[in-house]
Length: 404
Ligand code: GLN
Image (cartoon, rainbow, N blue to C red; front, side, top):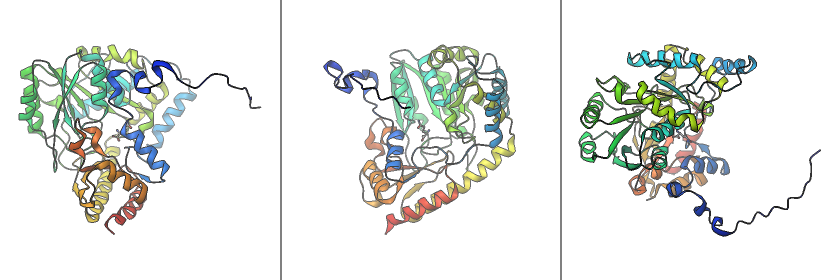
């Protein structure tokens, strides 16, 4: 029977906590709600197709899900070791070796985190001191500035521009000061789809060497490359010793809800990441780590098919967006596409996205929060194409109403 107790606790908040902004710590006040939460909620409210927040609308491989389920039934339900279960750390080391030929040690160089997002937070909190400066390329993933701020450090953004959103190594050189501690490199890049070239990577590597900087490499889209190839920066001579590579299960295996990621770095950097990780989450769900071990043993055939499927989705959506009238920056990698929406007469991306979600029935992301100055992204909109073909086709049918 449902109990019907009466609640006598007052819900009125008075005093210095009456204003929500007085409760939120000052270092986080400027960030507000993440753009992903806002636009996924609006998508639901307006029954729109969600091409905003980047999560697939299909499940990961059944054998991976089965392995996690079996692990639960087999009693793998207590805390995992802080750094991750040994079989997963070994599988991560093997996977990293396959893509880099670097032998990361499973016991000293690997940390399993709660998605790459926790890996980012643990890296910032474990390595940055107040007053340090961190160079990031904007548009940036929105957790970079927030976690840099949590560490009391300062973000120094360098704007990349359409059509290819390339890295200007000279601009990075000019931004370096005695306080610069690290550079965050996300390749393939969310939201622009840029895949860093050998030349760009070598340019960054020589700056890291010259100024003794740490490189934080966010490579969660490493298996989604349509033009050129993904080059892990840790493979550039001298870089393994100063690089923390962050990868995850989420995008590659369509399991964003599992929140399983990992950080790979030489022992001296891993110790710093783990100094924070042990107090953020300590360890991440044990049965899902067993599932992740199975995922990483699926072999090249799985990745090849993933690439074929995503290339078809990219081409379908990009061609349709172009014929509707957007100026499209076709992504070389990732599962996002950035477009210039100004042909439709809106100056602000929020206004355009509001029209899109309410009147057209498609949710997208206005990328203002990926820039220090949101005005730099006002003309752009981000679409995600990690959806089944029929869903993309329905979204395209709706988007075609924009040109009527
Ligand atoms: N990485 C996803 C994206 O860029 C969202 C992750 C999140 O919601 N925090 O859309």
